[in-house]
Image (cartoon, rainbow, N blue to C red):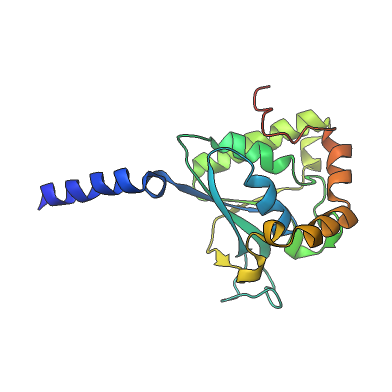
Length: 200
């Protein structure tokens, strides 16, 4: 029996190695369309899905997700990308100084939150926040990204998935009119959000 199981495992690795080694991370940072689009640019990210998390409401929807944040589920290969790299890109694509929303989206649904599953993720997230504080030259207490224990992820409606790709003009208009990139460039500087800038 154990030989049969070994064969199954080896076969699974050969056929679909991504599923074998994949890890998941849940992040909130304003509009999930934007965060999904920005994080998918990083090598080692298998896919990103939009959804809801952080609250108690069962089966939340876009019309009613009270208590939840708009979040993304990041499926990544830890052999190709590290948590610090993901956190670094995440923080540079949000406004970590804004606790009341993100850009033109206001309210609890849009607060920046890192949902950690264990002490390793919590420690890496904390270190990333400290680095962001230093880079932005603001006191650590000004960084308004909440660290919260990971709960259930609820997948958002199908029309929200890959919204930037499927609705390019509407997405670009929303992103520009919301002032997202203008604020990010003011915070981090032009090109500071490039996925190539991983080494300090």
